[in-house]
Image 1 (tube, one colour):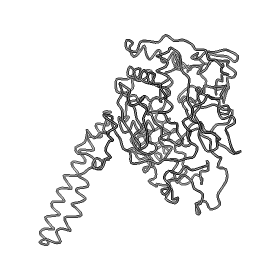
Image 2 (cartoon, rainbow, N blue to C red):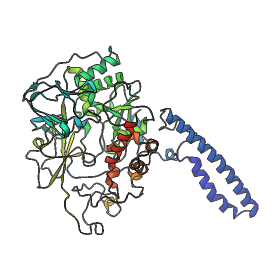
Image 3 (tube, rainbow, N blue to C red):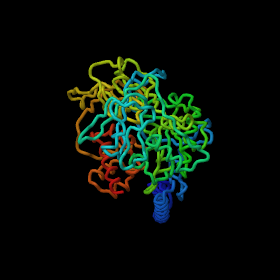
Image 4 (cartoon, rainbow, N blue to C red):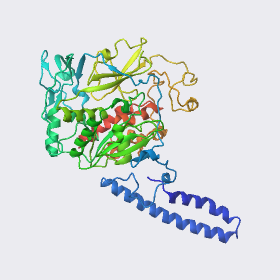
Length: 541
């Protein structure tokens, strides 16, 4: 519920008028004061109720209430809202006051070198909702080109999953119950490309573009919210969103990664505009010291918004919430910067682009750099000769929401970062009582506020086990969304579908709730709980 100016005015009158009455004509002034205050309170309550009903009705009809246009009076935050820097021009500006930056040592320096990976894999389980046993169209020993079909979902045979490299199929790994775990390709030294006949963006209708994206394997780069699935065939997204910066621990700098791919990025945005009847929204880095590449800032055909704040300000879900929130029935699509560049290159060259720039991060590496590689690269090969120490945890993704991997495993489809941390398999005697080891923490027990820019050499120790799920208010302090995450988590655990929807589950993804899991005193696996809830919602249709 919005806290408005009138609420504060009523509180001020309730406090001051009786005090003033003490210096006046006694009981008559005091009685008059209470009558005036009573009238103001009643009128204020009626206006507040009308205001809330107006916003609820607007949200029910999928209208954007984030900018206050469906309110009888502005919120108190607008009085003290941070002014937009003049350099941001006509773009929007959203200043987020909640969040927490997990500062770790081992950020990649802006140095790009060729990657060492020779084998690559596409894993069906990277795609939520995919059948566990898709139809595999290749066999071990077969040669494939970049863009050749590897498999497709039997429920959606027109959506193809293609090879990011050319080379020999060396393994089709199976998991439980004969499910397909991964299809592994040994890459050629010089890649061979399948050529596609590219439709003209300006002259083709949406159905033609969509069919081409499915056939070329690029359609699976899109993520549909809610539920984080490959988009449905019958869905026209209300809007499409791209976040051009990442605030997760040691995240890659997309302004560096995008390089000089201005034409490809613009072409990608042009394609997005054919896929939605709404807008293409681009979130830009508005933090102090941040920089948005001209590739992003000068793009045409999109609404630009700068975001200033701590993590998770760079998450696309947070940006959706503050620009055009997901309603009860609408669906939106998202796509990452590198996937959008790859989409643009497909339309410019006629070749599927599986290239990825990956940041090698973490304190357990001898060198933190960016490497040029391809989707699904072998992690051990990328890190060969760079690991230090004997007890390391390899993570595909960032330290908060990434997935633990073995050295012989492969990066997830959407990941552009590998994080290597020291394994935290030791125990501190009375660590809760004597917190002497510096570590990233939102707790006031550690004097982190005195060293705001210090980068911690942290390990994976959670410093405690799962405990009673108590109400602390910690989640609300770090999640810059107008929802109650702790109430939502408990609604999921008790299977209350209507409460889950009313508490905003459709607006969340695991990466959004990861920061809440980090600060959680109860050590609850919030990302797993959220995915369980999203699964329940999806089953309900």
